[in-house]
Amino acid sequence: MRNYRLLCLLLVIFSLVGCFKNGEHETPASQVRFDDIDVWVRIFEDPERAEWQRPDEVVAAMALSEGDVVVDIGAGTGYFTRRFARVVGSSGLAIGLDIEDSMVRHMNREALKLGLDNYVARTIPTDNPGLDSGSVDVVFLCNTYHHITNREEYFRRVAKSLKKDGRLVIVDFYKRELPVGPPPDHKMAKETVIPEIHSAGFELVKSHDLLEYQYFLEFKVQ
Ligand SMILES: C[S@@+](CC[C@H](N)C(=O)[O-])C[C@H]1O[C@@H](n2cnc3c(N)ncnc32)[C@H](O)[C@@H]1O
Image (cartoon, rainbow, N blue to C red; front, side, top):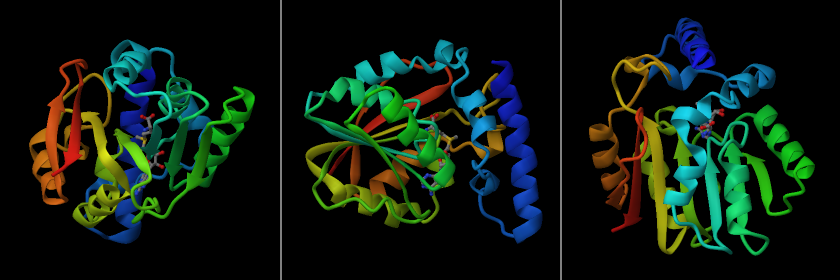
């Protein structure tokens, strides 16, 4: 909990620096850089995070199958990605994508350390997840949605990457004061996310009521 308060503070400081530098008016949180791996490992991998993030329950609720290909966009330190790798087994694949080389290097080191041959990480540009058409069973984003710009175009690309019956899963903070996460004006309301994703060609198929501070939504291509 303490480290997530620190995250809030860092988000505000970094985003203000970004705004001053660029003079742009986009969502301030999208300016945050995640390039200091030591700082972000302490925050994202804080053992106290599991109390409210409930990662194993989130993964269980996603009902993944052995052999699934799961892509974690904005995977960070791979907090969820390595869990996906364990669940989908050696016939499946968990792919951690991030715009920060330092995060990607960290994930690939972890995959080696954990002996997970089915866990790979790649660096992607900010505007394109670079996924082959019809290649993915589940695309997952946790606390990353608001960092993506030109979202309609971006998620149309995501839709194309999904296999038949593939799913898009989004977990993100409710837009209100919470003891964890960034301040409310850096968050995106579920009521904004659902129509945006709808315009990108998806329909909401499930809303899990599992997490105290985050919505947890599943979409399929319409
Ligand atoms: C708040 S962190 C969430 C990390 C991870 N999903 C978790 O729950 O621990 C957001 C991550 O998204 C990445 N990111 C930011 N903009 C991105 C973009 N356009 N495409 C992919 N990743 C992005 C950042 O580098 C960072 O690692």
